[in-house]
Length: 192
Image (tube, helix red, strand yellow):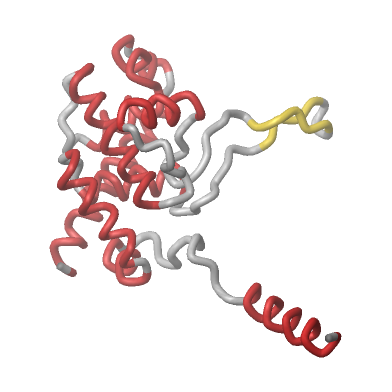
């Protein structure tokens, strides 16, 4: 019996050393390299584009900004006096960095109660849903990566109030998302 347990332990150890499906792609500056390395991403993005109308490049640029394609990304811890951890900065989690409350709203609205923020298909579907709500509430084109990102970051009400106008850093980031979206769009045309 001990021989069987040793063999099982060895198999489990070897399996744990392998690559994980949730690892981020290596070359995040090249949309073609991303989808070549992770073909399941393109399947997810295309499904969201068909269902919700959000272009692949807008989804990719937003996910890049939110999580750098890390499936279980979380916000950093807050510290008191620089040493005592006091919890995370927010409940944002996963590819889409969806907050707990917003994720719950998505699940209720779509009936996708088994959806997980760590699955690319669910995260991209969430983005499609959220960006469509942004289009309905704030009249933001689904092709407008900059303003979709601002609404994504600030929330629908914050966007409507223009809260982002008091945050120069956020305006800079939104411009970077827009630029990355345009680059990804050109790259995807070339590699299709």
